[in-house]
Amino acid sequence: MGGAMSSKVDALLKDFLEGGESTGSINFSKSTYEARGKSIRPIHLAEGLSLAGKIDVISVSSNTIAAGFGAVSKLLGAQTEAPPIHVKVCGLRVCISNDVPSRGHGVARQQQAAQTDLHEILADVEQHIAKLTVDVQDAVLEFKLAGHTFLARISHLKGTPLPRGRNACKWKIEHRGLRVELDGCPLLKVPDATEEVQLAEAFRRMDIELHARIPVKLSVDQLLAILDVAAAGVAIAAAEQASASAASSTGMPLGILLQQETSLDLNIFDSPLLEAKCAKTNISILPSSTAEVCLESVEVRCGGGVPTASQQVRFCSDSCLGPLKILHSFTSRGHSKALPWADAVQILLDDPRFAQHRAWLEHAKDDGIDLVAPTKRGREEAETETQKRSRL
Image (cartoon, rainbow, N blue to C red):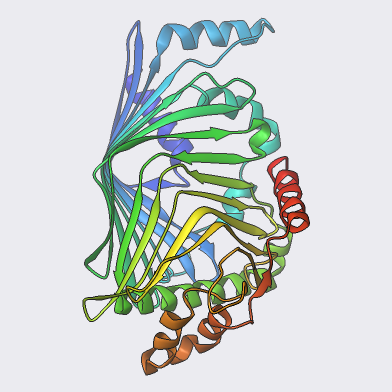
């Protein structure tokens, strides 16, 4: 019976996992599926971007009795809830890169979506993920683009379901040992913390609440690498936006709230070029590519000089390819429209290595950004617009 179960699960996962070996066991109280040495089939994410990877060990278990009662109740037409499901993954390696697999070996994102009628199984999926516990150990996410590599490592991550209230599901996420590298050099080390993720009914919106401090320290060379990757990402987004499939695709609104301080230290020749920090960060991204980043209690110091503060800073864009607008209350150089990072940006503009990104840097330094003075009316309009977006 266990062998039949493992074969059935393998058949369900065949479009995503391949290779390796699997086993299954069923007893009176517990059903378990375990697979070793599985490879994640390459998935085409976008034009010139794919995902692949491998899993050393993955196990899935559920309560046999609860599942049996649920199946009987469903046959009798009674209301039933899905049994709790526990997933444990050890040794996860995922790579997103522009190394597109050869034809015939990859799985198109549209093909995967077409294989399942999401509208028919949406309610069933919500029931299962609402009681899903995930335990991941030793995971690595690699992102390769424009000749650079971001590497995120995490020692342990555990997601435990919480009472969901009016949401489709809600989880407590505990993580330990999370750090990020860029081209082999440390970029970010996140303190161990407990976060919260909630998913609205019918997958209308996902919200993530982070309670860990985010301290980012990077050199000018690392900033150049990040800009190279960003430029390549914008090119991919432009290609996707121009394609017919992207025009018809839909996405899920995403909200990210960083409750603790976020800081940035940019160094040049081991000396501070720019220091910035904010007490709280709120990010909102809509399927139409509309994005807004709201920073509270912002302080910026350029080249070790006198810090400049703004109670709130908002970055808004109607498209990933469109113009950026900013709402702030910085006051320097005698007028309220001055940007405190302008001198640091000018130093980058004088560096020939940043020539490819000159348009971006000039836009960030001068009046190419639409600056809006934080009048009472302006604040009210901005807050009203944010409230509208949060209800979507």
